Image (cartoon, rainbow, N blue to C red; front, side, top):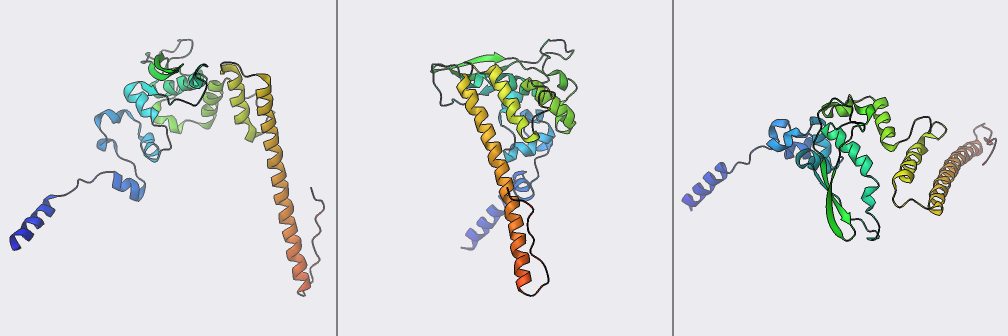
Amino acid sequence: MGAARQGLSLGIEEYQLPRGYLERFFNDGVGPGPSRLAEALRVLPDWTLLPLMKGALPSCMVDVLLLRRVMHSVQVEDPRLPSGNNTSRPIRQVLYGLLLGGRRPDHSSQRPPVDDVEEYYREGNNLTSSMVEAILPSAAEQLQLDTLDRAPRSVQLEVFLETLGVSQSTLSGVPPHLRLPVAVTCYWLRHAHPRPELPLLQALLLGLVYGELCRQRKSQRGMTQSMNEKTHNLEFRNIEGFEVQPLTPPFFV
């Protein structure tokens, strides 16, 4: 028994797990340093490591940077129509350009060309692939992947709007919280294939208007409820002997 215990103790002493970065990630929320990454993953910029581990960034970034390849999931749609992924292809081209340092649409950039990205998607009932060019918008000419997270907000907005093909002047009369759905709707109308029919667009706009009305009514109800609660509290205090007059709201909506 003594020899067995001695052998077991020696085995436990020899069995030592190397210190990794997963322990620090789960305990302290700290991502891995470049030295702990596999050689192939060292192309990833530092600011992407922790968001990728948390699932805050799409994993396709790794596929683009390492493999120049993206596999799109098959959506539930009519196989007789083109894949719905085709509609978002111009957006993905800008994503590839930001990741790989792509060319301007007019090819006037002095940057060296990068490899195109191979996309796998559905065509009919069959799996197919094609090469997609990485494009860098004019607003993003000076951006670098290593410092992309520190780009000024104004530059990020310009890149975003140029990608969707919408100008700031077009959205100037739109409430701030509705500018994103309006910009995306403009993009959708230009790039969807087949083109959306008028009743579909009308239904979408009706949904936006109805949602805005519900938001306003909810906000007004919340304000009215808050005012009613204040009135109730003041009336209760008056009953208890406090010389406070009940608060009468000037209006109710």
